[in-house]
Amino acid sequence: MYVPLDINQSPFNVGFSVELPEFNREQILDLAQRHQLNWNDTDVEKIMMLVGGHPFLIRLTLYQIASENVTLTQILENATSANSIYTDHLRRQSLILTQQPDLADVMKDIISNNLVELSTVTKFKLQSIGFIKLQGDNVMLSCDLYRQYLINYQ
Image (cartoon, rainbow, N blue to C red; front, side, top):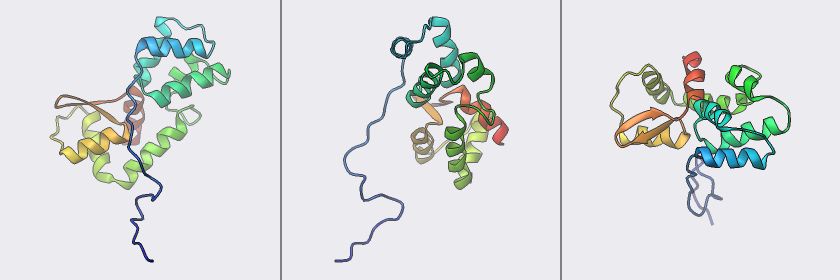
């Protein structure tokens, strides 16, 4: 039997999606301790200034520091460099923008602090990708790492 499939959707995607909330300061401090890192509130504040509470980026950061591949200072100084621990993630994100130039244009406006009226679909796409957070009707970048990277992307 022939069943037409959408090539843009995996037939294995069954179930429901789960959106992970951002980590808060206490959770990050707890994770740092679980990674046997002797972090304090200042360290947590520094990483949150860069990546917010983004679960994947926080986990990646803690893992790399705990593995002694890099220090927090090195991460903060070289966050968007070619040898950053975030390079692969940022390249995947920029690939999305390359494939969807309309989203790239909107991100340029958001980074430039140009107030733009976004459609519901555009907001959904950018939030799903992880680039933005919504607070009511306000749109803001989800983390400073994306701002630093996308300024150079333009």
